[in-house]
Length: 114
Length: 113
Picture (tube, rainbow over the protein chains, first blue to last red):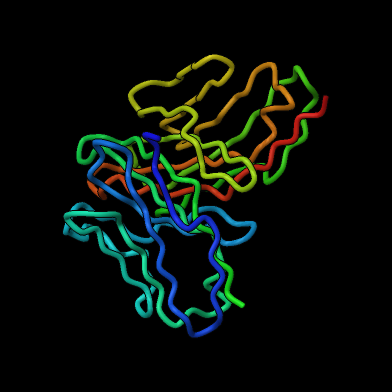
């Protein structure tokens, strides 16, 4: 599968727990974006990363949220001490990098906080 | 200044008809305008995109019309089919911001058989 992969596809967490979402970009892509889609709303940018570097985190909530894209392995979006308002679909997209515009999305992780 | 406004919120079209979805933007620095198609429970799929140096781009039954002076662009789906029923998002980005996408609110298209 050469597409963007995300796991898990569905994640249920109780309030106060941690959620860890993973994203493997398309083969050859070195740039990753995370977007959040709240129910019945559009997608909102959260963070833009390349390997070992956060390029733009202007869309990330200031507390409880963090992201990384290590040299080896998938990109991780981490949400600490989840609250009900964190329930949403989280999408990862990847691109080739600077000079390219096309972003290709994964299937998303649907987080439900109970 | 970073907003992208999309209309209508929902659209019902008969099979074989033309579906038209409109978007307007404010930031003149945007230089890339894609449309995404999203089916329930799936991720957005890149449908077609345009740069501001052209006024129209066509791929199969899908056409983007772009009006730089009005800061508007639209998606036309010709000969609409029930399989086109999905949510469509317009978006905009600029290379100097790392190409992060600013999305419209989405249009839920229903094509009746």
